[in-house]
Length: 176
Image: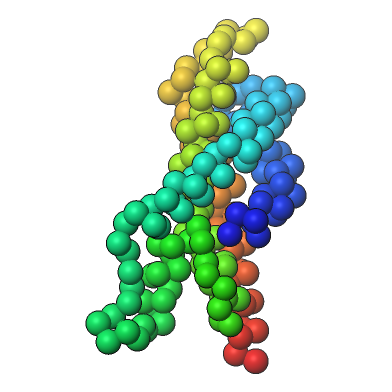
């Protein structure tokens, strides 16, 4: 899965940096240049370290946890298959029917990557932004973490909408 989605993550990095910088600027009352710099460095780190790290954790959990959606008689309903794709989202075995599985797996991976992004970006932005600026505005680690959480909620919400759109297109094309 990561081989399929990582190029898109790199392409989406710039719009996400700008979107999250806008949220940080509004929430923390910082300048545009500071917000963009902090957002870029934090998002680059979470893309390079956090996303593959979250994927690796999910992949390990897939092999360690006995999460099988196979029923007793060996058949699976569409709901069981969808659940299986969600819990095994790091590694989708190639089948003739994977077109809808990939966006479902992307949706499943958004949760751990969101958590990794909030953690990594929060640490980086705490280091970069915890201070008083020229106007005497004090930014604490708590309000920085809250701003990072909100900024990622906005960007990951848009990523989820994109994945849902991809799923809808896949399902409509499958019916043809």
